[in-house]
Amino acid sequence: MIDIIRKEDCTGCSACFDICPTKAIRLETDIEGFWYPKVDIDLCVDCDLCDDTCAELHMDELKNDGTTTTPTVFAARYNDTEIRIKSTSGGIFSALAEYMYQQGGYVGGAIYTDTFSVKHIISNNPEDLNKIRGSKHFESETVGLFLETEKLLKQGEKVLICATPCQIASLRLFLRKEYDNLFTVDFICLGINSPKVFQKHLESLEKSFGAKAFSVQGKNKDMGWRSLAYKIKFANGKIYLRPGREDPFTRGFIHAHINCRPTCYECKYKGFPRISDITLGDFWGIEKIDATIDDNLGTSLVLLNSAKGKKLFESINEVIEKRELNLSDALPGNQALLHPLSLPTINREKFYQDLDKLPFNEVVKKYYPNEGGLKNKLKKGLVFLKDKISQMGYSPKTYLQFLWINLLRKNTYSDLLRLKLIFPTRHTILDIHKQAIISNKGSILLGYKRIRGSKLETRLAVEENATMSIDRGNVSVYYGTDILVFKDAHLTFKGTATINQHVQIICMDNITIGDDVLISRDVVIRDNDGGHEILTEGYKKTAPVVIGNHVWIGQGALIMKGVTIGDGAIIGAGAWVGTNVKPNSLVMGDPARTVQKDIEWRQ
Image (spheres, rainbow, N blue to C red):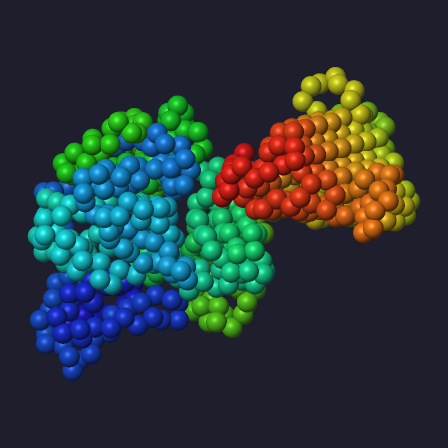
């Protein structure tokens, strides 16, 4: 009879639940959000099947002749770039799954439910691959998976299962024999996170963004493969996109180590031989070994652990690019192959108690605030300042402008210590009314130039009682650009933006530019019709312009008054935009019209 005394001795695989013939085992979830088996003594018949199926008790039995002590190692990536962008690493699992579907087989893996918990499914429907593909960073419910897999195998069906190393170990013990028609894939696992912590994070974001989430993607590649970004889309069109170093759930996992199941800190599935036929993971460090197979869109580390795994991998040769390497090439960047997660230094018991009492953001600030070391902050600050000084040049006039606009001017609100400042370059013209308000919670560089020696002017005018605000991030304005904020008008940058050459921003009312925005050359953004008026009832000369987050505006586009551009949209070159643009859509033409929906893009 299974009896969990130490939580460190249970992986939560649920194999004991599936194998119990009398349904004497139920799963109970603790304060941390992890489930553990509990036996009903009245129903138990002491058959010991639950003990026999527990991988934590029988690891030695899994070191059989089917696996090799030293795996064959490859760096690999799928040739289909679109699939690779949607995948976590190099898209190799997708290639294996597609091959299995082509053979009429079944594929098992983890998917998000409608409420963004995670469970394992197994099916022969290729459309399910879109749900299975990609990392789900917290514990997956596997109730029923073992029984369904055994049923299919006994029917002679080919089955490919992807799961954590401990789940694969439990599956092999559950089956009690080797099946030639079973192919197992595990992954390099740092640890399995608490579903409860993720749900608290998601609830916090839904409250902040004012809508329910409808799409979650861990390790999103909009910022590049190495960013470890989380991307969450909400029902109102808004998008949360943060690199791992800024996402509190990811930091709790990778840096604070507080999210993981207790058994992960004593993981028995490290080292070699591996439990599965194939092990997949990110090939961290590939750029130092073979840069020709690295484009920051994901490269898979592939370990072939059995003859069956090698044969399966060979079957996808035509759709992948691969390089055979040595195990010694893979280990430096993938220490999770060898070593368990280190224990957290914060108080775990109090952390999970506070998770029930406090808002998620307050718990994060209390236990692992995103401050970084002083040395690291100084280093980043010096690099940032060096770059800005290089752009500013060494003209005395430039530094007098810098001192005046940031320190001497009465209505400029800058943060010198945090470098939240305006950085004018040599050929920047500033015309700022004494009653205009400049607020810098981020920084702005005026006159960034790619061609040294250029004397193209960059002009910024902010008239009486007008405001210009940088709420966060870094705004870069290229040379030759004009920004004019008329009397009583408001121009706001909500985050990082890049504004290329010869852009005109003409603000007479209210223009808001979101975070992670790219504005190409010769773009015009205006919330007004200038000094002219049409003599028609209901006519308004001005109307606010709102540009959402992660928007790309192509060369020569014209954004007119009253337009709202949704998050993730692309405005095609030369487009005349006079009506609202929906999130994640591509518009082109004069007048602009939608030519593609549900588009995604990256820099």
